[in-house]
Length: 577
Image (cartoon, rainbow, N blue to C red; front, side, top):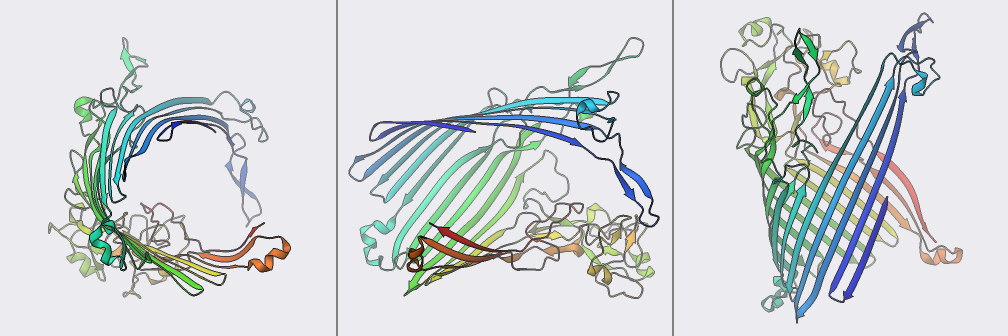
């Protein structure tokens, strides 16, 4: 990695700067497998080979280069008493280039040979690819303030991406903000003993996004299509496989923000409140053109639209009483989104227009079937429905359970919580210091369905858990969980339903640390400037109704393996000479 910069300041109010960065990385990966034979410990004999002696060798090389060029010009001057003007111009270029190459051969001559030449040429393959991308930006920014009471900022940025077609590569993203520090006004002086500082902020701005676009998505792309000529002779050919929308361009987000900052009692108590309204337009979504009619894949289009509204508030108190100083901080944020536009055709699911994005959409479970009479009187659910299985509610009343009986729960989000919060505390007394951080979120529900609580037993499965002891059987009709089954039995027992739906709200002691700083008068005789000894712990406890491993990080499918949250304890010492 190389980074170079050059600065020039010809006069006090004018400054120029140029930056250039180069990052280069070259990776080489070699992979092969050593022969492995399973041992039968009952007979003492060798079993079968899981990796054969003739397993192949693969070499993979990847080269990546990134360059950055930034040019800055800054004008900053007090144009007359109390009036400050700052103008900034930025030109930026970023360039990425990647190249990869791979080769492999099967049938190694000997297990100890690990180079490509140590394998036969009967079965071999090669591959390679390269890609590049460019991003160019021009930014102009103006700041103007009067007496540090009235502040105005205006910005316009133009971004161009090589991912888009010519004529649609550039996006324009303006923003403007203003602030008024009303606590500096003369009429506010009588309140200064209570309200130390007060400021109102307002802003509006747009930003662009191209992260979901492949580098060559807007280029004509060809795939292999064999053709038949003459006497049914098959000839290799190539043809386009997708359509291109020439108007495809940047995704854009416009955000309006209103903020209030207050400080009380000589800045011991501070409060900051923000209200925002964010509208994302031209969201990149797949088009829907029939391949039967066009023979080509439909292009992505700028057709999605989503609104987010929310609030963020932070409170902090910092004080000192004699030798004891302490502080408390609280942060809370709330966000609610609404899907306004999505795909050209939107089916039933967790995405409905006018509803939150990825809300809970599921079957409504009635309970566990107890008798064959209940099975006979229940709506048709599956051929395998039996006592001990979960029964779903027939929402549309058609006498059968299918996807049309799922219900939407717009007040329950699956993956994104509506609220996030944290509480921090710190204290210091005669060399001792203590800090704690609590963290959590709320407004989310998900399905406790993974490999560890599966009631459908696989041939090869994960270990049974304690809750599997409370599954339904004729002798345990009041069980919490449905019966244990195998194969296709069990019907809807493993389907996402309200039976498996749990709140993911939680609060966690994320970190706690206790330290002691040895007095300097003890250390000065041994030539040490400072010594601090500390013990800390992370993730000590979590309060939640979620029965799984970690309510913060949930797998998006039952086949994913959840990873347990780790508690960490540490002891350390910091010495400054």
